[in-house]
Length: 279
Image (cartoon, rainbow, N blue to C red):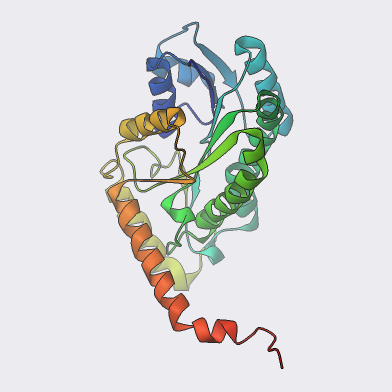
């Protein structure tokens, strides 16, 4: 069955690869980005199957307009990919309040704006699939990434609960947890560092930036393969609650879960000690 996809943040990286893979599958795609000129150049296409829409996900009104245009063009939205986002790195104390608010405005509230705009159509259809692009940083914390990870943890909590709310309407929600993928995510165009100089953090912040700069474009994950995995998952009768992507993400997630279970069991008697005791 031919699907219609709406993909945010589709001008580069994983979002762009998802658009390409969906079009190659013969599906319709609404490709959104803050700059669709760049997007058109990447795709080199004005095919009947693609609609380009400029969208800043922070603008809730623009999100509703984009959805309305999508319905007018293709008649439905079957798959939503909430991919738009960026990384705010640096120790918490080095990130100013404005930067924190900007990170949440895009990674969390922007995702919610687009989801809120799409859900009425999916409820009307009694079907739909939402992919929320999180990160391995939404499953475990990273040193020097407290703000970025907090947004991705928020996405995961939202997605888990939303899934329970919309399952009754035939709508599935899948959290995608990529590890490090070979995109420009670690470039200055996608990642920001702390704005506040604090001497105690200078060495750690410098080492972090140097490490990520040297790792950029050498990451193990292949964004084209991830895009095809998402396309396949959208057509699968089995739709996972979480889709862990990359050997690094799998290893980190497995270790974190094992450590959490070990700690849970170590403190189990303490945990139950807080219950009321029947006399």
